[in-house]
Amino acid sequence: MTTKVEESVQVDVPVTTAYNQWTQFEDFPHFMGGIKEVHQHGDQRLHWVAEIAGVRREWEAAILEQVPDEKIAWAATSGATNAGAVRFTPVGPTSTMVHLTLEYEPEGLVEQAGDKLGIVGRQARSDLARFKALIEDQGYESGAWRGSVEHGVGVGTPGVEDASLSRGDSGKAGVSATGVIAGVAAVAAAGAAVAAARSGSDTEQSEQVAPSQPVAPVQEVTVVEQPPVDQVRDDVLLEESPAEGYTTPTSTEGVESTVRSTGDDPMVGGGSR
Image (cartoon, rainbow, N blue to C red):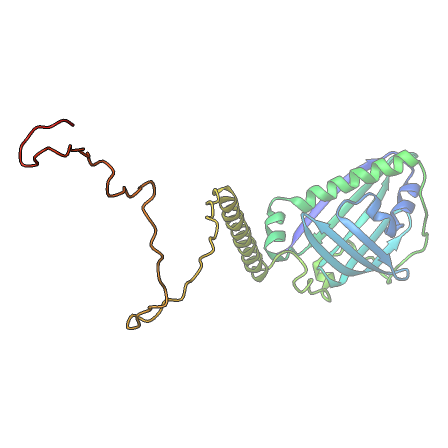
């Protein structure tokens, strides 16, 4: 399944100026948002690197026909499958109509989904608008190549059938089913890591919040060696001491004494005291 995009823009510069600027392929990243790099290898070979909607594409292209002030046609020879042409038609002495035709094969899940949304078409329209702003603001071309590329007959507008040597990006175009599964697994692993980190953080916080219990001071204990139970010790005597605050009375203290006269009869009560 292929997709064909056709977009046009009128630029207010002479046709020669517009054409000359378009031949400066390595300047394309200055006005084409989807083009990251263009490397020219000779008059007919180009290496392209593009990225549209997050999908990176690379391809080698050959210029099949180039007629000054009229047309540049190309087809991919490897990498992303695409082909097309850009034509320049004068509209008066100071204005030019630039018409772009592009046919390509979307690859990968993401690119196929973007193709249904017309992302490439919108990108092409936006790129032509920036080309118009660039060439009209500066008013002159930054360079020019006035050579011709012809193979005897006109190639018209090349399509993907002219890019038969191109066989896609071998997985670089878009996201394959394997890539989607790997991406989901990576996201799941990242989520698990975040959950684990969060759990560890919560545990650490709970440990910090919990009040610490007071620890009783350690008291030294003196161990006294005890004799065996069947051994009686008689080498320890306790010295007897009187009870504190107690005084033993003399034998006559507190006893009433009676002085008798010589003549008193002890058997008879009475007598003086």
